[in-house]
Length: 460
Image (tube, rainbow, N blue to C red; front, side, top):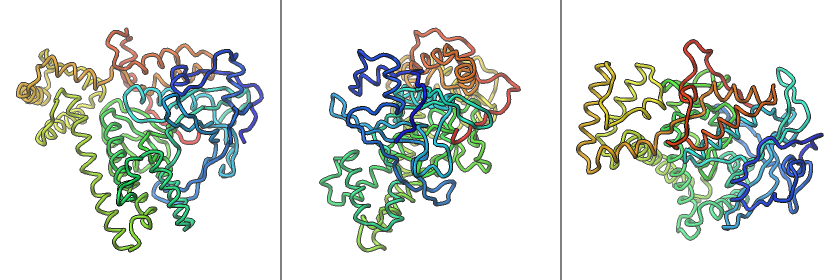
């Protein structure tokens, strides 16, 4: 059961999401909503549980589970979709591993902000329904105000959920788990002859598409352990994540990722490694012959690169105005990325400021050579430069969660009780492609030169 907060207060409520879920808060006061969404009062029909799972953390297997999260239950929307509703930071569970199971206000607002931005970018993601302050302190390096995040997910089935079942060598439970996942997330596989192989292939395809979207946005997840990878292909667990400013494949933000295992440029290969671990967990379901099961899994995992390359090429090509990319376009894209790396150019702004209808003002000979080749490529497709420009503006956000802006908004919220910077940032990040929204120049720029290197932290 969630720990009872002493004085819950509603900090932010996602009313559009609540409406989509079919949750009716009309007629309730802010305090009554806070009681329901903090664990102080259980919603009718709720059966709170903490989920068990295992996982490979930085490549090492360990038993885990929800250390500070409680699944309240499932919500059926008016359209018949099913979603998990979970409290994060709601107190200790059987899997807390000597932790307090609590969360501070700043990190919970951070997950709310970034997960909603990811949704606005069109990235499959868990969503944030609310943040509720608890009225209780949380002790980290300093005394902080406590809070609970209400997280919404298509489900909380992780790669590590299957690792847990496999590690306990209960094949019947592993099969039941896979059947449930197929029914909930991949119903098209129910009647497939090789339903578990099809299940594996579907998971691989969704992960390839997801990681390609991350790469196209300059998003660094930061902690791609197998327990932080969702079966249904949603981005989950926003602890040490951040977005790149200057393009660099070696970008790492997490304070504990000292060797760069989860650097931006390594995310595709790590995803494939994680999928291999998942495939290993379900080997007994693929075939009773272990050798045959291994070969089936190996062939499926090898298909990840093909799926990812296709999704990445289409995503990156659209960012530079190409509608129907060809294999040769990969070289053009990688030449631009190489220039960006050498010039330490801002990832988001470089793409956003490309304009096929206007000559470049750059004097950099390397960029000008690329620009000429790019315009030549655009001239050879059936679409006009104006249509390419429109495509680019649909793919390249005007704003991203700039690290320094996020941290300023959070610091003002938890230390000063001032939510205005947070509300403003939330407003622009949930409308990142809206050309009519007036933006300050400072809202579109990276941190000032000389700023300290940004770091993020797990478990805060």
